[in-house]
Image (cartoon, rainbow, N blue to C red):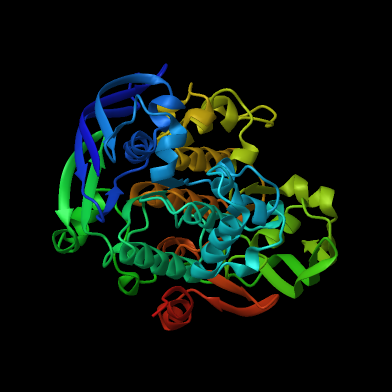
Length: 485
């Protein structure tokens, strides 16, 4: 079905990014996991299979790539797309319409099928994937997880033989990840060939037939599912790989909660286009608090984060700092937010300049230290848009340490990060806490939450459902939310 033979590829203008002497054969109906550290070459392998290399990403390509008997270098992309459908790490980059119905139908429309068949395909995709709630909506109003589901549905409607999924769980809550798992099971039952490049591994452990480990542009290990699960935890972590078992996650020791609150949120109600999103939010926070915000996709976590830092204006209620009320402009001055989609906040022509963007008299020594700590220093002269998803995420996180704000909000800061990068971000957030910063972390990442947070707030049904300290005594509360049986 797929043959990659002696392939070496380097992106145009880059000496080190790419892959070297990769050989990989994927049989029909096989489900293969590509794993490895951020920037190791997983996404490059997927781009070879779907034809983005060399048709969209130019560079120096040697070797042969064949998909379903087609030479990828000589086959137009539209022909490859009929056989191989892709869901990208950032689904926003693959949308062509502004409404959900048109987006699901778009790929099928390009097959020039009769209108009744087109409608059948769209209805089957929405029904099989249980995304009826997404129909008739604007793409711009969807959460990150809903966009990911929509991208999957648009590919599913085309019914390709091969599915290529690049970090498909990166923006999904635990329930949506469980739905994704069920969808992959459905594809396997349909006899599809599936390639998944992923950092979150636990939901795939019983699904994949083979695991391919990529390291610095080379395939350095190939495992059956049983062989991979038998790798000791210490060895797996040394490979930069995330946990395989959510139930094994323990709560790290945390600092005790402080009682001298400096931030108070009173009776805050959030709206979006006049529709209620959250109601009766009452929270207090002290310096050095690291507060995890959990909840399903669309629960209001991102809206809360934007409101706290003064970016979202549809609300009523009061925000107090040291007992004094703050308006949106005042909150903007003391808050910094790392967005879920970091592409919205990368502005400069180099990583180094990005780390100091908008900061008066930046501390260049601090910037250099932070870039080194997050393994970004070697990329300091690179344009941020040429980085991998995980590297972009770390760049935005680096700015948070350099900007000197009092309240820091991280919206899914570990999306697309490997184990090493997740630990680096964890250490950075703990260091910011030691400096007395108040930190809010909206996340679906149980492993990350267990490492950094001393408190958790659960958003559910448009309200705060729970607010508790992070401790071993409260592990059941977290497991009830994060582990779907």
